[in-house]
Length: 336
Image (cartoon, rainbow, N blue to C red; front, side, top):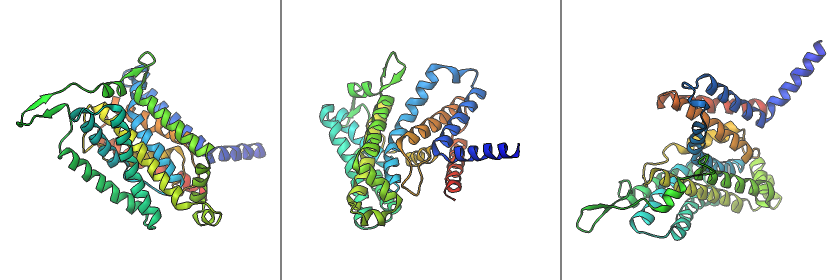
């Protein structure tokens, strides 16, 4: 009996050491909470789940980029500000300047990628701590967003030469990004998130660059001695994170139908929380996009459950902080 009990305990311990198992357990716990605190059955409605995925998708897109950076042993605090910058630029180009989407979208994505590459270049090229490099980019990009927008939201209210305002229609590209597909069961933003997750998974799992990134996160000096182009690989990870922040900025602008220079504040913390809850190690070298998907669902559903139960935002922020600490302690226990 004791031997069987000991064997079962060992199997349970091995199961719990698996990051995917812990992420699934967290998601299951959130699901149980939703079933118990269902807000008079609101949690069981299909629209609630569709909206939860829609709200989590922008965070998920940012988390995909954050996963790449963290696996390589870095951190990116600039994604929220880059999102705001791209949202402002996209709204300015499409609404006020009437640029065609086929031209405006690549330009805006290039802005996001350039911001990420600049932070990565500072971190990798000048050996500056990623925290400091991306913190500087976070402040700079937020200032750029306010400069481009004149400190105001870029909306469908367009100023005339004489100082008066006229209202224009919401651009068709905004309506399309914010629309629903598959019989109104899935939003385009969620489909974009799925596409971003698939692309980043392919890069990590099937491309040499992904293997290099894991090697750098595991042991940067050993990777360098093995011939891995460490600086280039790390720079590309930050550029990819900035590019995905640009994608999230396009979606943010479409959902809000405007470019808000204050958008994305604190989003980098939510993205980090998603990555950590999923099980990707903050020390680098371990993790993956599949784990980030689980983390996105966990945070997305938790936010929705708190929302439908009218929990104040202050309490949500405190709960998120507690969850991050719990996830990090679980990783630390596994490492020891």
